[in-house]
Length: 113
Length: 117
Image 1 (cartoon, each protein chain N blue to C red):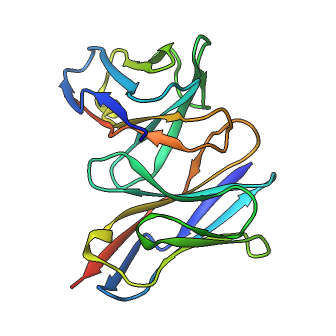
Image 2 (tube, rainbow over the protein chains, first blue to last red; image 1 turned 60 degrees about the vertical axis):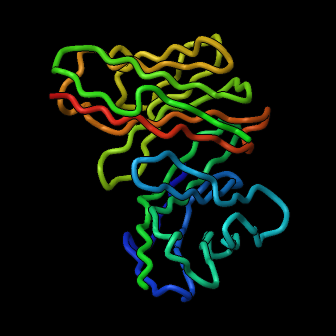
């Protein structure tokens, strides 16, 4: 069984500040981990993903995430927040050979001027 | 690119009617696709997995006779909500896997907002 927990349903940062969105997962098989962003009334856009190899993954729009197996975490960071980063962020896990994604509850990122 | 479209983007219907939602991959072919449902302020919940030419596999708790999925081709899938009721009101999102591997990226449609009166 797999599950994802995103700590903090709402995160607020000032423009230019560090963004840190937390994600912990549970998986009985080697996990594949994803971060998606969703803007209002839109579908999801992939920010980055980890499958194998390098544990620090760089994505689009300056985001990156680090897979830490010992901590079962895959936190998303960005050094400097932009107003355009305000959106809903979802962490997801899949595993095995189904391709199914299990999503976390989502974190709303607010960026204040 | 990898573009997925959904039609309609929003629909309002009366209770008891059926609604069909189309999902198309515009610039790639995909064997496997998924349908999700998202209630307001909540996460996406997987409803079913569909492989072209095969019957869909539904997640536990999802009524297969109510949510009919037809994966007609490698670029088209439809979800029909039969005898819709107000509790079916939700945001429905489809996705296709681009590539042959299950770690390949899923590309999501923009979603369809269904409101049942």
